[in-house]
Image (tube, rainbow, N blue to C red; front, side, top):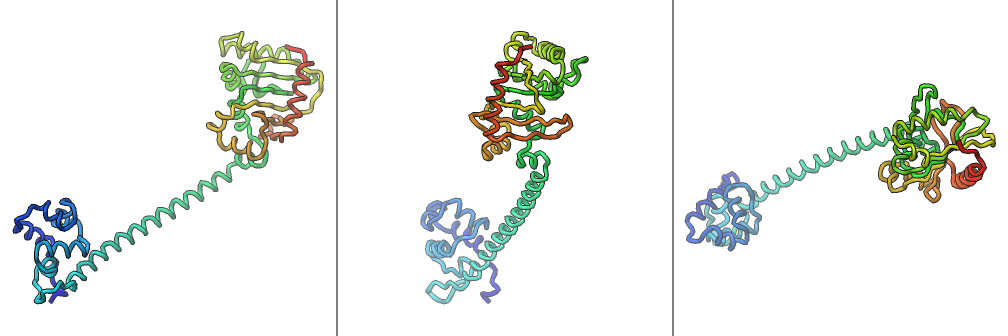
Length: 307
């Protein structure tokens, strides 16, 4: 009979509370739960533990049979048997919820893992990333370094990155960065080999273009210098004194790359400029070549003729 009895816990709690001379708060205190918890038991929104069931049966002075199923036991002793099925159902509900949560977490974890694999694959397949970790900088990465530099020294055989067309004064892809850096008080030193071309008209066109964009001839002339050296060269180079804090904030991958591979010395970094304008990347200097290049640049600069 008891194996098929209907659970009447909620209705019995309501009935016994109504018959009691004590308030709900007082009964809840005797049971050892809060008033809100007792109310949740009464409304079927929560299931009490076995200890709470025993406490309620004692407080209401009824058997567990009566409290759970509305049936009185013939024995004066507390009979836990009827409650076993009730607690079993509660346990099943809990286990079901746990199983559902485990399944959901597993599914979410699997999807995150798949997404992470995709992102890693995309990152590793990116050409600029592969260039970076092979010791090569792409043009956008060089531009990022220049944007985060306070002193820029360039030994150039060609001016195409700064001035595409001398006649029409068409700016090159680095021109906007030059204007921005000069406006912030950063300095440029352009060292130009005399054997490459007649630099005077090129520099005049570039300087005029800078003045037109910055509206400050004094800033351009004070912070952007041009000199011509008689020393022949096969290729060029760039030397940047970096603002490391800004670089770390804006380009953390490049920042980590420079430090991890020891390509930076006292905030300076250097790279060689390829002999072909169509080249898609430049090689980063190690610290030995970097320091040597800085010394050579300073030596040639002192002997070069200003434009």
